[in-house]
Length: 264
Image: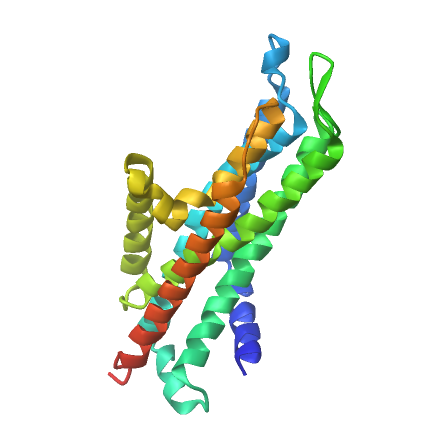
């Protein structure tokens, strides 16, 4: 049942124009940054941008815009149903509310992952066209092999898929408190900015899911520069924080929608 509902939610999302417009913005920002960086001439060997470094920097920008695109789309996820009155169909369908909510959440997660796949793939293409892939070299010295590069790129991508989960649940949770899409999107974006600011200012940032969101690409950027890096906190602690936060947000969303009156 949830799978079929998620499929319908996916069709609903992909049949509208605004997700494509937001996706186009994400892709344009990433591509423009990577191309501009790749074309910038290096003054010294230390200024040479390697392929992994270019990929990480481009995806860092692309992911940042994708996060806010998902906050916008998720912010409209439930509030739009209230404003249009379509939420009332939940009462007449032979489904439980939690199934409907989980389907919406799954649909948003699949959308975010689809966009992430595009962002990752685009980054690989642009980086491959520009400096190419292979060993990370500095002044003729091999610092990391091509196998190490690809292994770390795969790990960074996989972790980012996990770290996007609480972003989706957070957006839908905030959306459930509003009957106006505009208000929901505004508050969701504002809270996203506040969370990001708090993460950068306080030492408690490691306890917030958004602190770990951009860390995988920071590790790849270090690899690209030939610097030492460690996955410990990002892979183990970051994944734990992301999954726990996702479960909490999803639970709060189900609890909230299970008790809201949608008959008015």
